[in-house]
Amino acid sequence: MAKVLLLNGSPHAKGCTATALEEMIRVFQAEGLETELIHVGNQPIRGCLSCGFCGKNGRCVVNDLVNETAPKLEAADGLVIGSPVYYGSPNGTLLSFMDRLFYSTSFSKQMKVGAAVVSCRRGGNTASFDVLNKYFTISGMPVASSTYWNQVHGFTAEDVRKDLEGLQTMRNLARNMAFLIKAIADGKAKYGLPETESGAFTSFPDGK
Ligand SMILES: Cc1cc2nc3c(=O)[nH]c(=O)nc-3n(C[C@H](O)[C@H](O)[C@H](O)COP(=O)(O)O)c2cc1C
Image 1 (cartoon, rainbow, N blue to C red):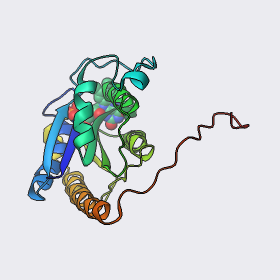
Image 2: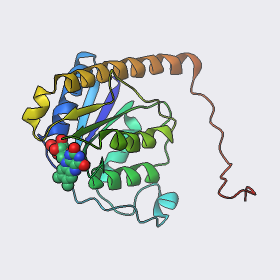
Image 3: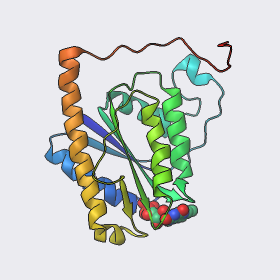
Image 4: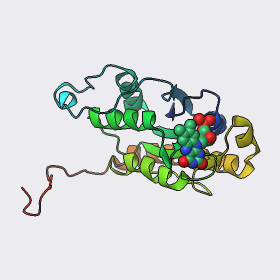
């Protein structure tokens, strides 16, 4: 059974972001997909140390929820990153988690379907959405989209339940994501994964 991993970057287990993710989970389950929701935002997650330990050992030097989540991401066919907006950006705990999760894992994420979901009271949503989508688009991950940018509005979960268009956007996003996951599984069986070139690592104009 295909599996979707969902990350809640909010400190609140039952807040606005969780309400958006739960709306998606109901659709995934109706579509026959397995789901797992991981609460990231209530954990003491430090940022990347850029120490290089992961390059040699295949895991982060800080042994916390990042290393616990890595095998779950490897097994997943889709990833939803949910975050509240803090000062116009995704929540800092979630960003520390995402940097370390993506940097410390060498397995291919190619063709795992990604979707970012943000929750704000009033503003900073699209800037935060852009930041989260960057994890997917540097990793060969197709990005699922919806009928609006993937956002809900509210200060409390109760507010989000009144954001009917936001919830509709979540349901349409989950349906599109489920379709992509199934279509990619068929495509992989028929064509295999596309080739990925590597080796070029250009930091300077002379290519060295
Ligand atoms: C530190 C902090 C910064 C915030 N910054 C913003 C902001 O820039 N724009 C905004 O609309 N809401 C902002 N908010 C409100 C939250 O983004 C909003 O209430 C969100 O829906 C909460 O989601 P949650 O219940 O999942 O935590 C901020 C809240 C906090 C705690």
